[in-house]
Amino acid sequence: MSSSDIFIGETIGTAILILLGGGVCAAVTLKASKARNAGWLAIAFGWGFAVMTAVYISGPLSGAHLNPAVTFALAIKDGEWANVPTYFAAQILGAMIGATLVWLAYYGQFHAHLTDKEIVGGPGAQTTSAKAVEAQEKGAGPVLGVFSTGPEIRHTVQNLATEIIGTFVLLLAVLTQGLNDAGNGLGVLGGLITALVVVSIGLSLGGPTGYAINPARDLGPRIVHALLPLPNKGGSDWSYAWVPVAGPLIGGAIAAGVYNIAFA
Image (cartoon, rainbow, N blue to C red; front, side):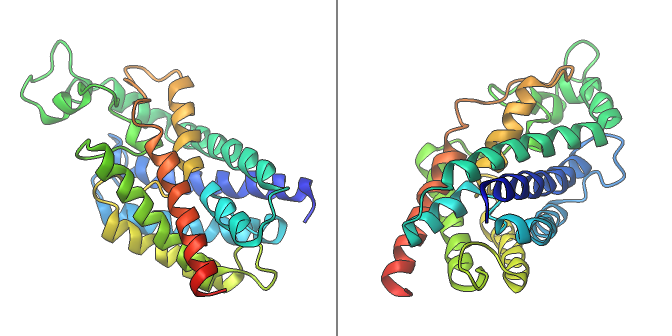
């Protein structure tokens, strides 16, 4: 794979991943969405199908890493680091493009949600409204969850451990079951297996932190949230932003180490 193929494939694939994954979060969260309050099952399966779609689109070009933790783990496994910066740059760019497309697709819903007093609080809101109180919490704004992850209980060690464990499971599955014949990315059957593993992680381990398990998936959209002209959008919670970056990279590195010791 050439550097241009890698960059194009990862940019397109990660954009599709975030468009569909962030899209299901927007569908479930935003006022005036037909899927509002569809629940955690919709989010878990939505992200799984997003992974499958993105892998099948980008796999022929880049091997469909779509995740810096995957790229990092494969580099540790094989000792090949030359293309890592290209993968990382394309994944962050693609994630930002995907998040921007979610905003465009749900533009009216974002506006309706962020001008509703029961959501954002302020004069005219019921002060006992759980939504208004939640929106006023320090750090995260009322639609940040559409773009990036956040903990239900803010405990740094636990939050980091949850991301490490979830990504370890993902990468161990990718390295043992998901790779193509060349071993440098996800294969056709591997894309389906990985998608189902992502659903499983979401259902089983996603509750504490929202299961980023992908630094680009969290950081790229968080940057877009900070930049978009959304009314009453609140903060981007940058004090937490390092956890869904560091945790998945650590989890991927551990998975690669276990693979090299136990399976290689």
